[in-house]
Amino acid sequence: MHSISRRNFIQTAAAATGAFVLPRFSIGQPGASANNKLNIAMVGAGGIAHMAYNGLQGENIVALCDVDSNRLHEHAEKYPHIKKAATFSDFRVMFDKMGKGIDAVCIGTPDHTHFVATMAAMECGLHVYTQKPLTHNIWEARTLRKANEHYNLVTCMGNQGHTYDGLRQMREWVEADVFGQIHEVHSYLKVDGLFGVRPGYPLPPQESPVPASLDWDLWQGPCPAASFNKRYHPGGWRRWRQYGNGMLGDWFPHIADAPIWILDLYEPVAVEAETVVGSNEWLAPSECQIRFEFQHRGSKKPCTFYWHNSATDLGFSKPDQWTWGDELPKGGSLFFGEKTVGFTDNRSSNPRLANRDEMKAFKEQGYPDEKYPRVKGGPFVEWTRAIKGEGPEPGSNFEEASRFTEVMLLGALAARFGGRIEWDAKTMQITNRPELNQYLKDPVREGWSYGEDLWS
Image 1 (cartoon, rainbow, N blue to C red):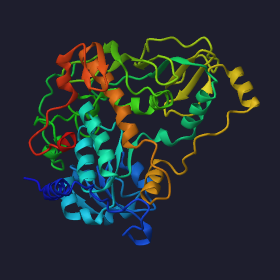
Image 2: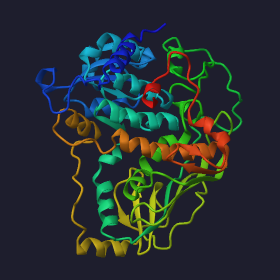
Image 3: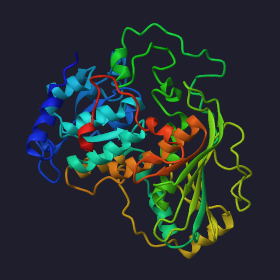
Image 4: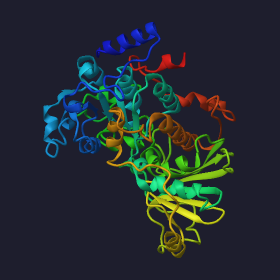
């Protein structure tokens, strides 16, 4: 049995006192780390962790945790200082043994373990940066929203485009009425979502030998125990429903960030899968088109939002106003307003008007004044600056990120079961197909339950 004594101690103490768990490095207070540097632990030391190593070069990396020992020092050639960090395979053991020497945690595991690793860190009073998508199911997203308020920590989801200037500039244009009311948005990516699982791959997935370097039980985390398959690790897990949400989980958090944040598209009343290709009980779709319906949001009129991913037919045509070339860019978002059409790219940045001449004239007359402060240094600097009390809360904090992720996950549910889902955000219920409400939360293995107390 893996040790989780620190987690149990913190839960008991918090329940007894009714108080928050105090963060190790309190906001606005001098830290215990030398030279005001943060002591940071990594949960998931290979793969996308290179972004954290690069963004956190002014801090101390004190611990690395990975269920695959081959990945612990995968990036050590470029970042040799990480070799000095303590190493672990189980983040619960790491928090038990080193919790007092850690200020903050970066989580870059597969999607199905984002929530448990994040909650374990927050219960230890540690600030946390979790890669996108924030969670694997809607109950987890709602629970992290509660945790964000309860623990009073600095949190951030890793969709780095949320720190880019273009996202803020596009919002300034929208709020200056450049487009008029925006009634329709199409976010898209022209690529398949096969993730190495080609048509005809045998299902159910066949058992493969477990690599000697991998702790397969820990890799599965809260998921029901299953046999290892070579397509799961490393990297191929995204398309398998048990562990990822396909292209929605991979690219929706980047591409759809601009329209959802700018237009307050957080609580759809209905979501419908219009096209789904390659979906079954094991696999998320390789291609899909999903429609989200939103009612009035303050002064904003109802809006229909579409997500498309396909290697061939995206399901919509290039707008007549588009004059930047014969083809649309490979990915991005098109904003259809009463006055004109706008575009942001696949990182929710580089905004432009669809008509090149119109854009030139717009630039010459002068863009609207800046309203939203720009973020310097990228998402990891934004996060660490906030922890030290030197800057504002990250824009993609868990209050924002959990609401965003819920929209994405409703799309994943529609793609999984087909047809129309009518959603009551206040009660967190699917109203027209109540039999689907059981899928708002995934089954959890014994010993991996987190966050239940936040609902009491």
